[in-house]
Image (cartoon, rainbow, N blue to C red; front, side, top):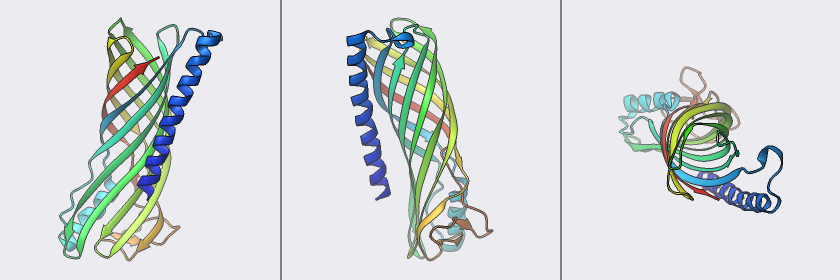
Amino acid sequence: MKSTRLTYIFLLSSILVLSFSNEAFAAMKKKGGKGAFAGGSLSVGFGLALATADQSGINSLITTAKATTNSTAGNLSAATEYVGYLTFRFSNNFVALQLRPTLFSQSSSGSGSDGSHSYQLSGLTVFPLVRIIALSNELIDFYLQGGLGYGKLDGTIKNGATSSSFSGSAFGAQIGLGSEFCFVPDHCFNIEGNYRYLPISRNIVSSGSGLPAGVSQNTPDRELEDTSGTDVSTSLSGISGLLSYTYNF
């Protein structure tokens, strides 16, 4: 249900982005823009990113499950992100502003002596980014970008008959570089490498049944804790590679 809600939020954000871009572009054509926004241009895009997000808190629970129940679930390492963005490029062709929402997904599954095991994380990030276009010609742009944003993760752990559902959120920062290839003026492809710092140190249990391997605290409305009494952390930090398509208005 939580992943479904996140999907609805992402789709709604994409619809709003497209609606805003159409209205803003129409207004710019009609009025010619004002002040610093005069002569600027809009673009929208979407893409797929592969990210490295080391979930040390969850992986410690997986390690315990391997030792106590012979679990075959692997550690959480690689993640997938679905990315959308709206970009406004100033007329100086040197600076652009971008609003970038993403959907995050990471999972691992297997089985143990107590039954099936699964570990799932799904999340949402929203980052406003400032882009500096260092080099530009008719075909290729090279740029640097960075910004501050927000991220939220929902997680579920199931070990046989025991389970835990939890969530956490935090603010973070992102920096990166990339290139845009426009072989046709209105249709472009982007390749990016980004680093995001967004650790989530505390996760609050929303529902729980028993104690999954490695967990000592699984009471709703309290922190998820491991057997040492430490809060189980999650993370949206890591390096990602993005391939995306951009349409320029």
